[in-house]
Length: 86
Image 1 (cartoon, rainbow, N blue to C red):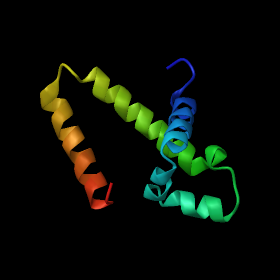
Image 2 (image 1 turned 60 degrees about the horizontal axis):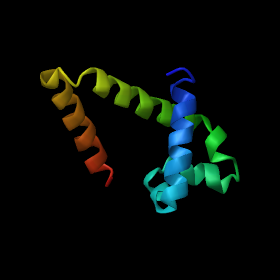
Image 3 (image 1 turned 135 degrees about the horizontal axis):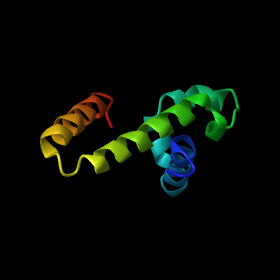
C-alpha cells in the first residue's frame, strides 16, 4: 500500500507478462498500445486496470471475514470475466 495501487498494478502486470506473455491478448486495450509502439507500462489504460485489480484484491482481503458480502462481489467479477473469455 505504501507505493500505491497504480505502481503495484504495473509491477503485477509486468511480472504476469514476463512469466506468461501469452496472457497479453486477453487485454484488448493492449493491442492499440502495441500497434502505436507505445510503452504498455506507461499507458493510462494499463495503469488504470492495474490499479483497479490491486484495489479489488485489497477489498477482497478486507472482506475475508465477511463472506456474505465478499462472495457476491467475486461472483460478479467471475461472471464478467467469463463473458470476456477470461
